[in-house]
Image (tube, rainbow, N blue to C red; front, top):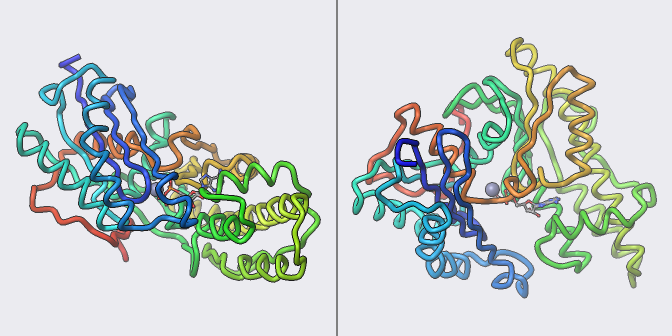
Length: 344
Ligand code: KG4
Ligand code: ZN
């Protein structure tokens, strides 16, 4: 056990407090996730102040739990990694202070991980994916297509010009009053609904490049709901299915452009990876798999439980950095904004 390289990862940038320990042999020794759904449910979305306090209550407890589950002590750890941004700064600070305190007290290297890099690299934990690869990063805060050239090396090919896909799922779920968190609830209802009942717009379809847009789609759903007046459960399910189909149609259109752009710049690249919370959506995963096959790419996605925020993704990105001697000093400042690509 002690001969292995072990990294502890801490995640607290949004509404999940999470800790995990992974090894350089790609083993997940422990993973604990505390979702703050109950704290935020009655507000229909994440309240930053409440989130920060909940992280403060839980962070230490989860670190202890992660050590206990893994059967190790601080002394066995090789490094401490933390999501140091981007995210809700109150929560990010809780994680960063906790990680720095552990690193200082136990004289361990400290690694500041970009939360988005956590999502971007997780697929390499569960599958054999070589750089460079094409990445669709789709979460609550982001929707981007990137070429992943290496650890810390990203080139953005396209991004949303307004809302993220996750935000659209959450806002439509709120309009339909189907509960928080929006994405998973909407997906469950979409299975029961008719995707061809409402014809929602597919923003950006046919446009050059790989940018996304979701705000017009969200407005179209609002107009549809207003037109229906009193909604039945069937109406709601049909809206969910039709909305989800429009999201997937846009991703299909945009990715067709991304495949070409990526191929032209990286002729040896062969993998398409999807990551981030929306990557948990099964309809999207199925569509991406089909598209990848049709375009000569190999499709990979992290297991569902590693798509939404978790500690494993931070521990693993920390491991990738640690193996390349990419550690940080204890004066590293938490970042509310932190673009992944080096060009921004
Ligand atoms: O990556 P994540 O956990 O947090 C951020 O970094 O933002 O992503 C959360 C987002 C939320 O918008 C949530 O509604 C969405 O991912 N999501 C889903 C599904 N599960 C989570 N969207 C669609 N289908 C799902 N099954
Ligand atoms: Zn995330």
